Length: 428
Ligand code: NAD
Image 1 (cartoon, rainbow, N blue to C red):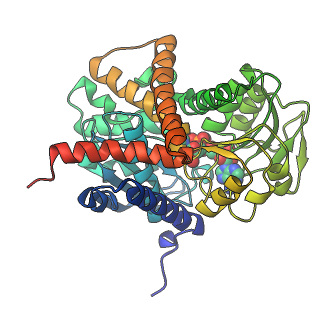
Image 2: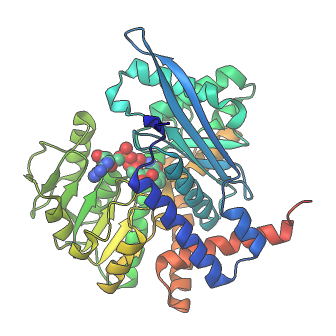
Image 3: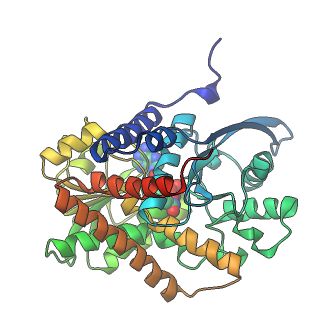
């Protein structure tokens, strides 16, 4: 029987999942991870795949496929984004769910790891259709999500509006207590979101970058950087870097590659990209046809904030920068990482570089449960404190054990999970 179109796994999803599993296995061997902990961690606890019908604006019905992968809840409720994209597949969300477990453990949050989404392109649907799709998905998820059980958040293709609809649907169906709005994070501030959540991932990536530069005695003033992906993560990272005196000289997204050696105004580009659903056509910058010009441009830093597996063995050799910051999840394949290492290019790995988002999601969850509202200064100070503590711990392990920042991040994360498993025991 032919595979249904919705079941086809993309090559990058398979690569992402394989890459996460390989890195997990390598670290498990390196630290001699307890065999039962290794076995438990190597698979998600639950894999949910659901099909649900939604009425389109023209009266017809379309069947959608949704996923929720709950990787691990040892440290606390499952936590992870919901991705709406035609590329979403089982392998992709399995790999991303495992990264969430590792990220929450590294950040020392009382949260586990999950990921999910719907395999469809929200840009091809009206706002009304997107609302019905999101609400119907929430209904189909039923009690598989909940404020003390599994807490979704925004990711690619979703935003505060998607989370508001999810929260409202859940609240109407099951919510009896005021803190039930903590069923999702990343909501709009009006609906119980936290100040600073939208910018947290991008800013967090920059706080890591700034720590790295400080360690090398480098000032960010006058440095040049490029960014792939100019959505939530990329635009906030670019704006923060620009505030710190760095210059954005190249941007690539799914619509175009733009360059300007004199600098592209990040704040203006962010507004433009939101309005036009991409960067194509923005001035002042010139568009280049060949994406390899983006990879080969000499810069001080490169921020990857688009999607997984965009740096592969085919383009890694072109890159000329000092540091890659992985705002996206899994953007560098293991083969590409070897090439970058040979070329002396450092990487701040995803589970460290983009942990700002889940840290402020955790703050939102805490505020909702206690009916508190923190101001921007409080959120930013708490974000920096947690992030810089994680960064310094990873850097210390990396230097002491002479391993990459990625390996060090995996070591720290898995050791924490192992300690908790061994203390609690595996019942019965
Ligand atoms: P988004 O949907 O807001 O933006 C995605 C960006 O990637 C867009 O600019 C889009 O044009 C670009 N893009 C998509 N496909 C591309 C391609 N083939 N080539 C070049 N560019 C492409 O998503 P986001 O929330 O900014 O997430 C970006 C990445 O960061 C994802 O990997 C996501 O998992 C990760 N992440 C996001 C958060 C968060 O808080 N939003 C937290 C942690 C990690």
